[in-house]
Length: 275
Ligand SMILES: N[C@H](CCC[C@H](N)C(=O)O)C(=O)O
Image 1 (spheres, helix red, strand yellow):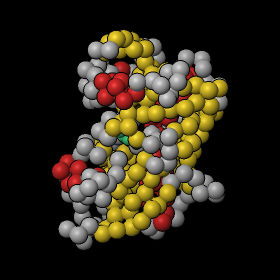
Image 2 (cartoon, rainbow, N blue to C red):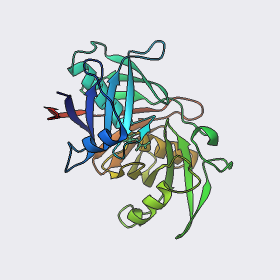
Image 3 (cartoon, protein in one colour):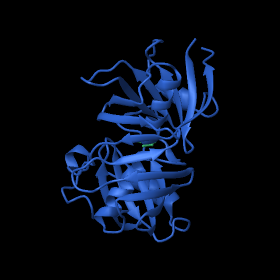
Image 4 (cartoon, helix red, strand yellow):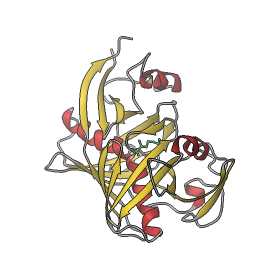
């Protein structure tokens, strides 16, 4: 009987599985079933806790989108991961180093119940995002059927394209999101963020996620939006990002430094799969 925990980070929701004390075979078909909101449990991503692989890490963390694809980063998921391994008694540490397919991240459980994630340094090398155009990524014009779109492109262990909009409620996000996510310039797809800057320390954001569609929050997307916003001279070092599901605090000094994210991690229920 496979046990799972249902969790969310500002409404970006997860099925979290302990891969240490149970044997899991995460095929794309099985992941899609778990994520299915009618035939399965229902979630945006499936997260699996595994034994550490990299030197100096406490765990390895596998991330699967609802479409079954495995990816290298999930900011909201990282916060839930930290909460999960503590709640399950898998560690008693407050600071946890976790290996992912994209590298190592450091999670810190804060006294107020929130979690800080050191998301590592933003990537601008197009080959590592990956992104086919060789132009410097912070102002690239994407050719769409609906016309050209100026975007910022950055990697956070997963690829992000950020579009600045004047009004998040009126921008044609439902139409543009899928076009950007599937654009040929992103050979592995991309997460499409739409940001409305309110002040140098505050912005609104909606994200169409690769492998899912629009989510209520996207942690790596919030980090990508702050990186692009800073490169465009619109945002300061510490920014409150307002997502449909709630607020994240993002801190980035700029240059070749790590980006930090602070936010909640919520456990909803534990369950067992029938088969
Ligand atoms: N859809 C993303 C993975 C989850 C990212 C998001 N849920 C977050 O909180 O960072 C991708 O395909 O790269």
